Picture 1: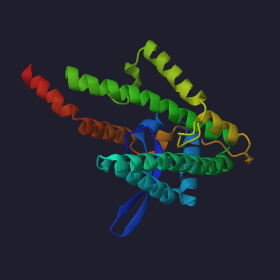
Picture 2: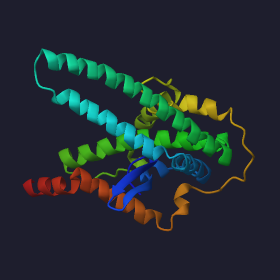
Picture 3: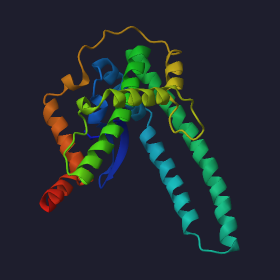
Picture 4: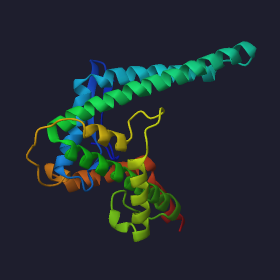
Length: 247
């Protein structure tokens, strides 16, 4: 469990070898129904089944090394020429890699749609995207209030949002859902993913009732733990204590 608004898989390298990890973001679960959550999990399991975490890590590593090489070249005409050639090669590599990753996303989407249907897939992705927009806003506000005003604010409590805040966030989320895919995107846009999903045949499934948080035995405890982790990462508690001591 992580505090952010994401559901993802990655490889963690340990002494015994690579370990594939599924992470679930607490912020991603806000108002997320179980059916949509299950479709999101199926998507991530599709990545694991396809071995995408291994190829994704390799491509990222190559890209990072190329960027580092470009920035570490010494001054001089020869270095400028080499740097420009490497930069061109990096841009080509970046575009090709993103295209390959987008294909992996589409294949993982197929797993989710075939397991739970296009409606559940669209429902889950839509809610996760919206949650990401809201969480980003709440996190910025919490950090500002804590560091500047010395006031504790929640990273997750949407009740503190005004009607104007909600309207603005809804418009921002809708723009993210409706935007087209670009060659620089590592994921197809939600709009395109929904369109592809409608082309996939799936069998009707019984809908899971309840929210994603209902699947956890101590949802309140987990939310509190993630809230505390965010406060620790951002140093809010220390700043509030420091401001209180000054006042």
